[in-house]
Length: 341
Image 1 (cartoon, rainbow, N blue to C red):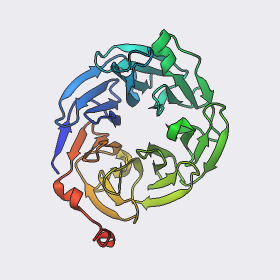
Image 2 (cartoon, helix red, strand yellow):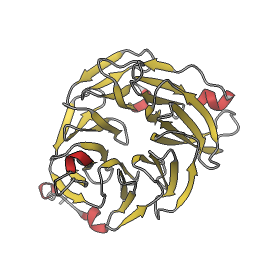
Image 3 (cartoon, helix red, strand yellow):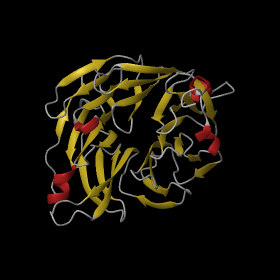
Image 4 (spheres, rainbow, N blue to C red):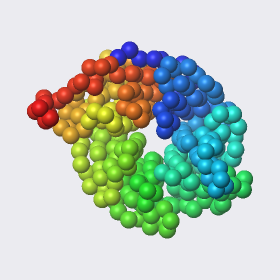
């Protein structure tokens, strides 16, 4: 599994995200820009310039123009980014034009489009006397009129939100908190529906399964966990020996990929920083392999929608795209070899 090394950022990666078709890979970093790449060969297609602070988060959609009943075939790809400059920006992927800018009081740490692509959530930082919040952005109204509606704001309690995602069919939001709690909120009313406290430290990532019925979290408490979306009931737990910063679900094989590593101060005087992508069996909760290569903590992991490759972005400023060998797809865990025989 020889990786493709993408060198287009001058500072640490913060998030990488495949588009829905999987042919494009978007990356955000602390160098103030968002890049877009061909995922199959690593060729850089372009850069989105406009932020004046670290870009913490990125997400994208394929938007089908259904504003007119007679036109449902024209498609325009859209991109959202959130930054330390206290803004979220909506971009036209093809032209690189910034279509709209939302301004907030503090940095935008996580962006996510809703399942129907008409809305997005923005997680803002708790800072300078402002409470950390989750804002609901109306994408469809911006595209129709060019003007924004006032975002509906949810103030999660008791501690600030750090990551968030939409549940299936946009029924609710799943929020990860600084103290390790996960919660479920009604995005229409701001009411808390459910909460659990499975982690003992900050939740660093939250990624949904393809059908959004379950999700995985990573935490600095050195574990990743799998949960059912409707109930927040814990399903599986993967305990490692280093702080985790990202976790992702593979759609073909039953694996969870986690990554992280010790920061520079912790690594000083030791021989290893544990900068590896680790594969865990989703059902058996056993580690099955590791992929090395980064020279610093792994900040973000994304799996291609077809499950045939994955990418990782690190504190070292590099993206590594890994296309799985044929042996990966033939792999069967010994406990399951009798199934289908």
